[in-house]
Length: 545
Image (cartoon, helix red, strand yellow):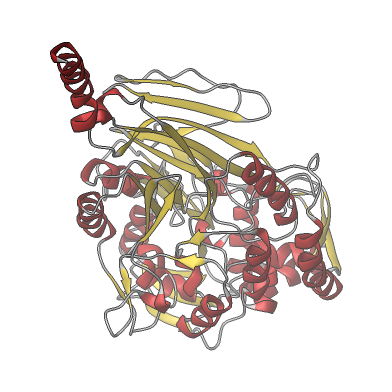
């Protein structure tokens, strides 16, 4: 009897550690959260002559990935209501209807969401079947604009995933949000909110941002964020800031980003932590079949659009360059043609065009030019004005234009009637080294007439025209696309070229890695990271803890 009691006591003692803290002996578990990313999508149909993009193709990929990875979150990092030719007709209704059908989960706001004013945006948000998050944009009641969430937490496979949206505060002057919409500093808001979310038990924190890359990097450095799903730039970009991966997938759904975040459950705390990330940019191309349900939503909008805008207005013998990565970093043949057309239409000495007003992010020709092409390039319908400025004022305007040289920034100028040289290695405000007007050195005290858009006259993209004499007011000036269509019709055939109007004294520094073939292996201290591939761009990060 005594031996039996001793045996039972021994068994009890052996089992006690498991009962008291059995978690220590349980194997750790891993859950994969898949994030799908789009940003800056202005077209619902394929682009680049039908070779890339198209939301019906995106839907095919999305459904396939969800079937493979059950814990999938589909995110859109802003800019979809405007600008586009279709949005001139439908005010963004076509985008929301298509995104509803595509299965989008969460979107944040981009600066162009406010292009038609806050009332149109509110209506589109009500029509959306996906959720919105914006943490730094508020209505007059101090609540997130449009009933959006300041953050969203979803539990996926036991992992608490937090997503919050941020928008650049300059939207207040870049678009038309109205006086009742308030913007707070996105970095300060992101810093506070991310820490609060971590304290509340978020295992994975994703910032869904519409910010320039430089601001995304600041956010990553100052906030507690695992992944930044970004927008605003129209290039395929990645950056690693500290331990935070920042990704941008170009524009117009040419690529669908896929990030697989592998979460490991800690045996002691029972909390999940991010162990590694695998990511790739999946080309959305004509090899993909269209999802029938989404294609059925797209078709009537495209039919109405093509019927009204298919008129041929002229031809080009050269390829017209409207890609954002080109026009926002240097002189382009299309930028020259637009500036020349504006200068001639207003009989001014010179003209300046902000590259952010040149949309579509595509090339055209050689071949026919249609009305749709012009309206795709110039969807804002800005009016042109004529002002009188001094040579000294012109230099100040150019200093603003190159203040973000090297970044994909919309203030970079395209010009006519003059040329200039700048050195991006010099301090902001002292970069323009030489200006010639009509082939002669610019005279600081001499008066020059200039054609610009009413948007720039009002301070858009940081251009300061205070003190300028307004000779043709906004209500009196012609509309940009009308001027260009008339010029093309009159010429019949155009052949614009790059002429050396803008010269850079030194190469500018890139703010991040632009992922274009050939691909490079890029080591990072503390992580194993690689880029490789042919049809897709890939990356992998493993955290060494």
